[in-house]
Structure formats: structure tokens, C-alpha cells
Image (tube, helix red, strand yellow):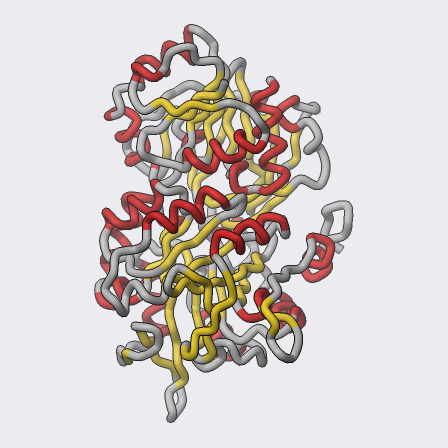
Length: 261
Length: 204
């Protein structure tokens, strides 16, 4: 049985790992290479890295760091941040990354999705949509770490991206980011019923039951979290953690013989 | 010694790292000159079928690889698109495959996939080996592997299938004919299970 994916999502800033709240006040949580080593030990389903400096500072992706991350990783890696061209995407694949996440570049030029997919295959191209609730209802896509509004409706845009040959959409809720009070379930429902390509949701997980709730409703889905997997306890002490295979099987309702209950 | 075929597509370093941990030497072949003293080959691959085929053809290694695999019977394993390239053709593109194993690469039928999310087949899935194949020694039960693909390998000789997985249909997630092996999933990104499989390949 194909399992849902539980994905730690890590933010790169100044060569370190940080965690934000509502896309603001980055707090240092550790060294990225070390984090890969720990997540290897924990046999994580997938790991996602987003460089939050590259686009806003108009920098090239940090290829040296990406290569180190890929070399250390015994699990599939997704990289996002500052990717604007087919050549950059190709270079990052060459370094051993399985999936490339586009964000502002795809929002500005959706055709880029098709161009990259033709080269590397649809399955490896992801778009991350940073989404904020509008004051008077509905949702809107933002770019540049939540600073730049686009006026684009994420539900319509998700459908458009699917038609362009995209492999996966990650929706990241700016309102829920770092708050640890649960996902924006309404947003998840709306996007999920729109597309049939894989969907990963990010923003708001504060406990494993938050993750369970999404899996219970949506089945095979990617459930990503930042704070949940890097902080422990009410004072948010930095401690990398992740559910064990047995704990995951319980959530996936798979018994110890590998069969569904 | 395991030779990793580097034609600009796929993840050479991840394989190198796994074998480093296992204390098994590897070397990288970028041109046909590097294909000397070859004992075992890994043909990795990510991306689209046509792009991968054109890169391999452009690498200048094609002829030498055909000779090593078909004439000299050097064991070779194709990974993901590397596996698909070993077939005759693919629904994904127009290029001819290597035709090392008689097969077609077909697109999954979305109508047979029950859940809302259809393609790609992405994530961790069960792999059920058949006939205690030595590639899956120690992985007979409970092994899960990471998949990322929308096309699958359909053997024209059913006996070439050595493991099955389910995604809408039951498909060959691993194949073997003589010295030629192919696996659809990514062992280099499948934790302990993948490491075990790559170790088994080295020991074949």
C-alpha cells in the first residue's frame, strides 16, 4: 500500500537552519548537515529544504550546500529557493536532489513548470504556494517570504499548474506557520478537491494528532511540518524528533505484518 | 568494484555514499575510456525517458555498455528511469530504449487508481519479491521502498519479474534476466532497505 508521507520541512538562512513564525522572526535551530544525519537515523519519509534567502536577496541557490545535503541524505530530498531557470534545476538534479520546488518563479512564469518537467520529468517538479487568508474571505498567494502579494487565487492557480505538467503542489499557510495550532483544514479541503496530482500540506502542525487528522480525511497525502519536528516542549527547546515506523504504521492503520487493518 | 555510469542524469553520489558506508569500492565512468575492468555496473536515472536516452547516447558510452552487458554479461542494475531505459520503448517519449530486456514502458491507467491522488506514484510502497530472489535476500518481508514515477515496466516475458508492487494494478517493481537487473524504486533513498538491496547487488 502506498503510504502517506510525513515530511520535516527545514528552512535555510545564512547557512544555518531556522524556524519562523508567520514567516517572521527566524530562530536558529541548528546545522543543516547535522540535521540530515539525525533524520537519516530516524528514517524519515522525505525531507524538504527551503532557502529563504535566495529569492529575496536575488541569489543563486547555494550549490555547495545543496550537494553536501544530498550526499549525506539516505532519504528523498526536496530543495526550494531561488530556482528560476531550467539550467539551475538541471544542475540541482545533478547534485542528487530528487525534487525541485519552485515558488515565485512559477507564480511569475507558470510555463517554467512545463519547461523543467520536459527536462527532468513531471514527477520531480514541485510548486510551493505560500498562501494567506484574505481579510474578507478567500485566499491569496504571496511570494518573497510572504511580503509580496500577487492577487492570485491559489485554488484556481493549483488547477492551472496541474494542467502544465506539475508533479506535486505544496501549500504553505502563512497564517498557520510556526503557530503550532493545527493546519488550515478548510484550505486543504479546497485544494485537495481541485487537483489529482500529489498534494503536500505545510503550516501549523503542533502535534501528531494534527497530522493524523489530515491523513484520516485525505488518505495518501504529504503532511509536512517544521516546528513540530525541531522543537520539544512548551518552551520550544530545539530537539529534532520524528515518529518511529511503528508510530507511523499506527497512523497509517497498517498492522505489523504490513497489511491494512 | 562497482562502476557507476555518469551520463549527467541521476544521482551518482548517493550510490557512492551508500557503498562507502558498506566499505565497497566504486568508481565513476563518464566516458567509454572509463569502462575498463568493469565488474558490476549501476545505471541510475531520473528525469524523462527521452532526455535520459539522449544523454546516454551523447555520452559516447552506449556501444561499450552494449558490449559489456550483452556480450560480456557483466551484471548491471538500472534504477528508476535507468531501469525503464533497459526496455524497448516508453509511453513517455519517442526514443528507442536499450532493448536489454524485452518490455514496454507504459503509463499507469489513472482510472484504476482508487484514491484521489493519481500520478505520479510517489512515496513509500511495499515491494513483494518472488521466488526468494537473491537481490532481495533479507528483504522478503516488510521491506518498503521509495518510488517516484508515472510509467511502469511491463515485461513481455512474465518470468523476468522478480518483485511486484501495487498501484492501481500489480506491476513489476524489480526485474531480472540473466546478468541484467532493474528496479523501479530508489534504493539509494530507501534507508536500511535500500542499503541492504545495494549490498545484495554487490554480493551477486
